[in-house]
Amino acid sequence: MESYELIDLSYDVLDELKNSKEYLNVTTSLNVLSQKAAFLIEEFKKSKAKYNSVTLYGKHHPDSKEVTLNFIQAKTALYQNEYYKDYIKTLNLFNKKLNQFNSKLNEVAKDCFINEKATCEKR
View (cartoon, rainbow, N blue to C red):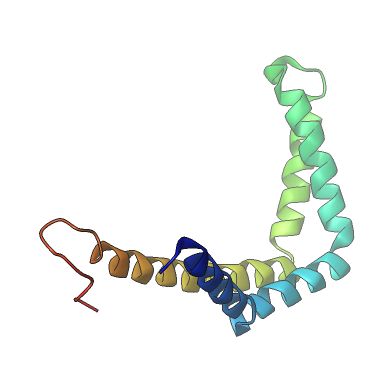
């Protein structure tokens, strides 16, 4: 089998994964999160950017305490949001499925390495 044929098969597998219930749940929950919690996401991004710029100067920056507190509040508000929690839950379920697939693929590929074995007979 030529390498381009394997790549084509890989794209077919990716298409199957993108059509899976878990992947569709992730994209749906991300869309809902983006619509329902847009303000929280923006506040988190702004406060994180400010926090990152202030932390470059260390704790001695005059706005350090205020910026840190604002970042903690924005992060907490986002992370406690029901739509964010649902997104993380669906993302973790999809990643679990992807990791299981990856593990199985690695297991099958190990059997194909030519050491003492000559073929992929263990399937």
